[in-house]
Amino acid sequence: MDRNGADSDSGLDEALLRFVARRLGQLTLIERVSVFPAAKPDSVVAQFDLQYFPARIDSVTLELRVYLDGAFYVSYREEWNGESWMCRWDRHDNPHSTRDHFHKPPEARTQGAVDRDYPTDLLAVLELILDFIDQRLGDVWENEQSDD
Image 1: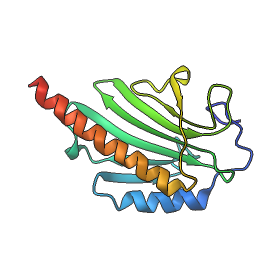
Image 2 (image 1 turned 45 degrees about the vertical axis):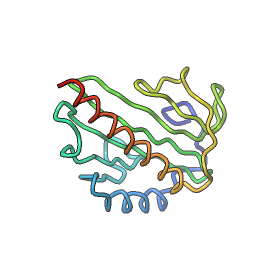
Image 3 (image 1 turned 30 degrees about the vertical axis):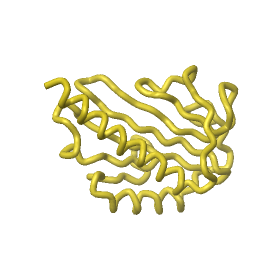
């Protein structure tokens, strides 16, 4: 059982995670990609370049875990002055929702999970996630300008 309480007996899909890490590393928005870092040895962690975000944001990360059985967890997190804004896209068997589901921001709580139907191909899922992040970035800047 993994740290989210899901069965992941099939093991990490290390080859796919390494491929995704290389692709993420090519994106202008991404400053650094860590593959299986010591603090998260089952993940690929991408740090966003903060020059694209308002100064009030301290860090922005995307963390991915992918398993050979097709299960995955992708979390997006912004840190704002010690507070987190996060969401998560998941595919795993669980008691709270369908296998494919989304944990809504700003807290990505289990009880707030919404059933989803993701493409089979993880790269297509990642494209949906990057579109979401692009929209989120626009919303953050729009809110920043309205706060001025």
